[in-house]
Image 1 (tube, rainbow, N blue to C red):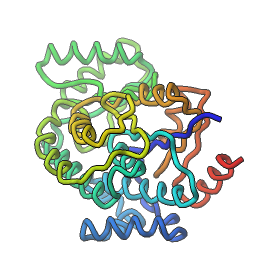
Image 2 (cartoon, rainbow, N blue to C red):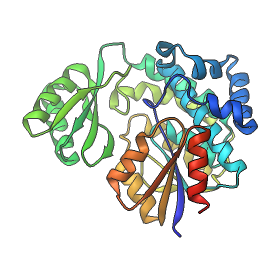
Image 3 (cartoon, one colour):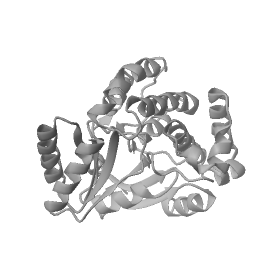
Image 4 (cartoon, one colour):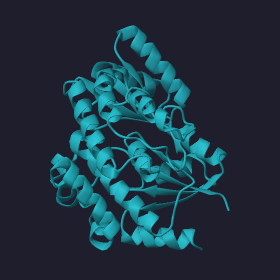
Length: 313
């Protein structure tokens, strides 16, 4: 039997009601929510369970909320003796992965991503940045067209997420993203969909975030991960505590190399993946990147039972 990996979702997977079933049914999940609520000095758990959606969608709230639900789901799996051989997370999800690997606690990570989300929201004035999903065009072609538009306009536009072979997300200045979108369609992209996000994540416009985030991350007493974390920046496993902060700081402006992350998991011997946290976005991406992977998810009691039955079969 091949190795098991946990993967953790990023921004966009949030939904009002997430985590409530885990909180109500499992004491280890409840303990995670309580620890985060105490660390943040507010009832983030209530925002996850009850909304309102417009507040949950604010980046400064979305990031700690998704992380908390993911960490709660991972705690429930750990309590049932399910431990991953490797972990990875999409953008914000890398913090959840580090929690699951024992590199830091959920409360510390939630405090860090609350700061990260706030800094990201503040880095670019509303309306000046944008992101679009490009469907049905080779990632190398997307990169080439973005580079050409950036050179012509003198504005930032570049790939932000290499999600799967037929989906690349681009980010940058609103005008440059729009112009690149037109060019990408002309080059054969099936669709270019503007995304409802508050900032151009994983682009050079996020550079001001790095200097603000680094001291926040340095204040956390990081431990060596118990299992390797395949990082967004390198798409390679890291198990060194000293490398965690530099990689998380670099991640702010670097593209998420998710295709390569999943390929690296497979190269490391992973045949089974559990998406841990809200939604099934990464499950779908994993299957489109490598059809041979077996994929499950854990976001509530029902999906937990299904996953446990499959893993213990």
